[in-house]
Amino acid sequence: MRYPSKKKLEEMDNKLRKIEGTLMVGPSSSAAERFRWELCQKLVKYMIDKNMSQVEFAKLLGVDQSRVSEVVNHRIEKVSTDKLIAYNEQIDPKVEFKIAI
Image (tube, rainbow, N blue to C red):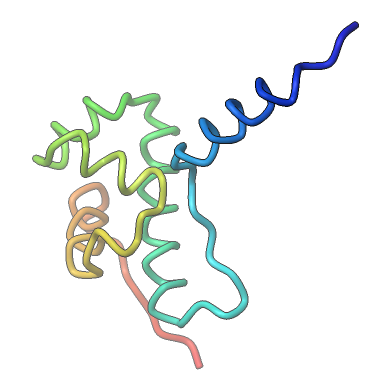
């Protein structure tokens, strides 16, 4: 088996750097960032449990598929906390949010 050339490896590296995957929150993240990440996580879990595509989930929430993509990939800087709470209330009207100290 031959290894890719240096040029091929550089091309692959450049391509991979442009891909946006799911973001995680780290230990230095603020409480607000962790909360928004958890709100996204709850929405993703619902979508997976219901076996819904991003397009189907977008229709359910009344938003564009691009917004669902931001939620699925945890782009918490692009979606406000209020919107994430509203989306969660749409899928579960009885949802409760509690602040723990």
